Image (cartoon, rainbow, N blue to C red):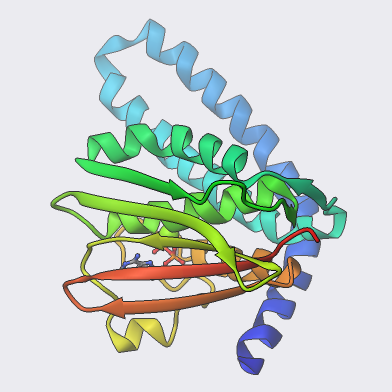
Length: 225
Ligand code: ADP
Ligand code: MG
């Protein structure tokens, strides 16, 4: 909606300004991580505490990384990419988290899909964010289905479906709002990053959700003619 897009533009501007600062945050973070690792070797008795600090440092790094994503589209280089390849990488990246949570990742790709015009790393990021949310919505395990197929003459449709808790209306209306999260350690940036990237690609994102049955996110992207 209009209000949402205005908000995204504002965040995008903030992202631009923040990106310089973000880089400055990342360097000391890396130095801190390195020092901690050295300390851990010398003081194994504090291993748990060091692990906790490392975990939190990684979280800061993750948040900074997501903010950086918002500043990135400026330098976006679109190319013709094969969705099979992008999905292959994403599924590999997500498979250990899926396994840990007793989730089966099912992939259905229509043969001979047209190429998609995109910045592959950004589309990877979208799929990672969506699959992460899908996994996190199924505390008792289940199946996440990722489906890619042709839609109309010149569109590609990617569907990420889970069998999770579903999204209640009061959450649905705030989906994509920066820092809005219902999770104890969520960042509330995942859906916003997705919206922003899909918007930059002249695509669409639709959400269908049924409480206690699951959620389906459908991303539509332009195909290469
Ligand atoms: P985060 O995952 O860090 O909380 P997101 O922007 O990715 O931030 O998601 C925002 C919120 O939207 C989540 O906290 C969750 O409540 C809800 N949500 C997103 N995807 C799903 C899903 N597949 N199933 C249920 N709820 C979801
Ligand atoms: Mg998320």
